[in-house]
Length: 402
Image 1 (tube, rainbow, N blue to C red):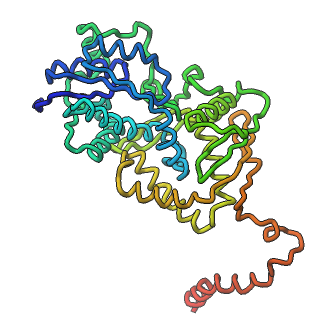
Image 2: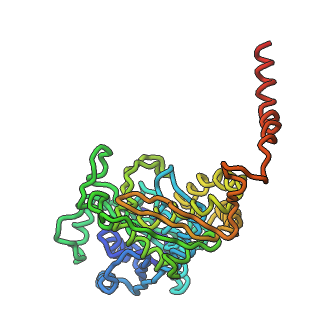
């Protein structure tokens, strides 16, 4: 391994086995101060314990940033204005957190005059790409250290041995047979026992949601108010962005909403099985699409929908800070000017059903849509419309039949 000359490093630090080992390893390899930086985006850690462990492991400074409001307002909500979804199933809970974590890591690096940043993502996954593309977009002068791609600690057994040799506490309880990632939008589970795509996850794996079978026996009715495509209130109560998502998570989790089990295509080329819990996000996307159904022009909606797959890929691949994502975002945000109104949902045992929607500037007009008699639409006009639509089909048939 060829070492770069490094003066100070900021490490994205969680306090788990991997980043604790990385913290000590960086000190030994680069012989410089290492700042441990943690982002609180709703994963419910004991932050005092995380801070103390980092200091005990040799961190020169420990920085813990509360980013929950910023995460939801500036990253989750813009993504949901686009109804983003990867490969038709995944609501991008991990993907959307990485650019925020990286952006704040760059800020910390500037504050402490560090010349390098480091992360604990492996060389097989998507996160290494998401972190490093963000670093390159925001601070191309910073050096990037990815230990998993250069060290020889390539197994859990080796990590545990390194930790014990260096006095880093290792949990004595049996390790979870899968990898977890959590934030205010979701919890993800990958690896271990989930690597067999035929194996059903054990019920005790789920940390957040009740199973539909064990969910409450009474349906919950929820009303969500939107302003320019962003949710602002639940049942008339206005909430901050993080408060809104937290409350919607509670409602969804109690009713068995938001579990998905999928095999996704990683950016690096391999397929990976993941299980996710996204209760509030599942409800939010359903409600937002319902309000759009009465407030968006047909052609605007279809044009926007043609970009959703590309937009979702950009987030999944790590291109949040790219000019193409920003361009699509501006188009999406422009489309949301009149997405103002209220949606009512019935939530029951894993199902989220829209049962009402209304908006001051609704494009739905009963006098046009009615099956009863009206005086605003001439049904005879449809004949010419159909003739013109079918003209090219008629000519094609005549040519092929000649």
